[in-house]
Image (cartoon, rainbow, N blue to C red; front, side):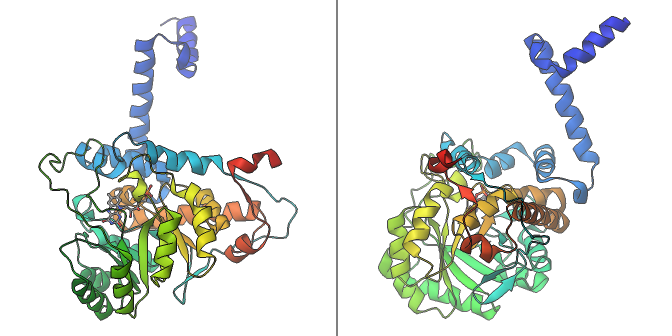
Length: 381
Ligand SMILES: Cc1cc2nc3c(=O)[nH]c(=O)nc-3n(C[C@H](O)[C@H](O)[C@H](O)COP(=O)(O)O)c2cc1C
């Protein structure tokens, strides 16, 4: 190629929108191939969370990746979870004395190193050899509790044995399970000195993830797993462990959960995997925090990808956040080390955001003047 041709090619390469469509595609393919190759060469403790996602996409069967990443039907709620977190701005406070930010947090009378926990996710053995045991070791080493799904590949006893993590066991309610069955589960989690017991209430039906090919939905029964307030009350009164309800979006549900005597609730739309067009978790968080009025901890999930998301949720009133899909990508990218790297990255980003907004600890995030600006308040600027 002539010198001019070469110069033009380089210019086109960096201004690819000016290229004819076919050439644009070639440039995109070339650059994503380069990106993929560079991700493959990296060690997990050098990867960003985005790179872990890239790595997972290259190394995981398409059907499994869709099972992890996709959401229900149009996936509007998956996108809204991110959109509404993105809408919230953070006000910097540059003249301040904060040099070190502490992310220490309390939950059920224990102090943990950060308010960032791994969400309960079933069947992690489908995507990694060690599955939830890797989550357990990473959580124990990072001093955070671990939420384990009843659908986990490894039983809670094995996870505890391999990791000695503080386990909170999350079950679904099935119309087939009576309250007695739950009481047996409480005994099981008590036996391994677990930290809590929970019920996920927003998945009365199995998740309907877009393009999900692992189940044939045409033949699956519509299993009803509805749970009412009386059953929750009975479970709470038979448990001396904290009982947590996950999957609250509606403030009326928050009120009923509170009246049932639960010890914490998790504001969540299951990462947009169940009811499409439900509101994002973050837009319901302020209302739910108001209903709960400080009586029990309110945890938050769905869409958390950055430390700034954690800061936004805590500043609105959450006591901690759970991360789902990023934990799957991290597990695929590097088992225990991948998960630790993912948690460390979020903690580091949270600390940076705290310093830049002048907050030295999580308590001052709630007590002092708020740092987050909701979309309706932007005219304040
Ligand atoms: C692969 C996968 C499996 C999941 N399995 C469960 C489960 O068994 N029980 C449950 O309560 N939530 C389950 N969830 C939902 C998560 O606990 C969490 O609410 C959600 O992933 C948070 O959204 P995020 O992925 O955007 O962080 C699952 C999520 C994913 C991605």
